[in-house]
Image (tube, rainbow, N blue to C red):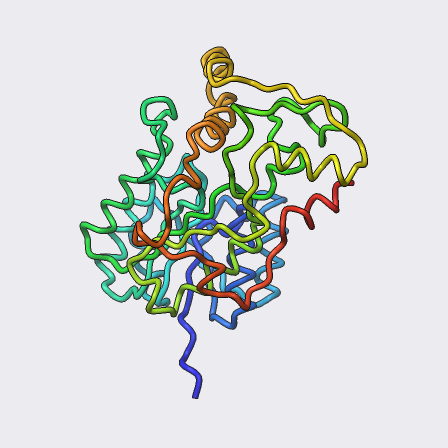
Length: 308
């Protein structure tokens, strides 16, 4: 007889990834709940998402990260909590962690990370505490003894339509900027695939108190390789303009915050190699495609085919 599926609460279900997580939770037959702020029902865009989730079978619970009573009430209905709030709301998870601790019934908590591993980046002091805030949440979860899985999925595939060209509004057809020597690799994963791998961890004892990394074969490319594969698809050579580390740092300094954050992420990944410089197994982590080889995902090549 198949084990009973965990009941799942999604916090941030109206966001892009949160919405995918809620859909994936349903697809994997988990009883699924979403914590929704009262104000979300007055936002037409969010209301469309909430209605689609509700129609699909998600139970909507009113509450917020600022209201401990609503958090505890929601938490007591489930076994797993997944938080997918925006980066600006990462510190707001502190009350959620406190509520999880008080409820004492949660088998797994997945905090809002879903990017680079905050314990492994080399851009301290230049990212406006973007990763320090996420690392602080990790330490708090560990200190409270809450069972967790941290998900480091690296870049979202949504960066690819511009081929990592922050100043462009469309895929490059003539010139492409290559940061550094162009040989350091980055990782790109589609949001719906991130959701599927995340939901797969929920009842898996192997992922308890571990970091799940995503480095899918076919989705780990250097900027030179990205340019080459795009040239093949559009049947045209691009003019490559190499941007040195010093030039990129200058660009970061002269671009006001928060517009410079994407350049900072590019520096972290394609200059410092923060997504790929370490071995996952020896660092104590697990890689999603090795753990769940049955899960299909979109490769970079397949994604770029849709942009030609």
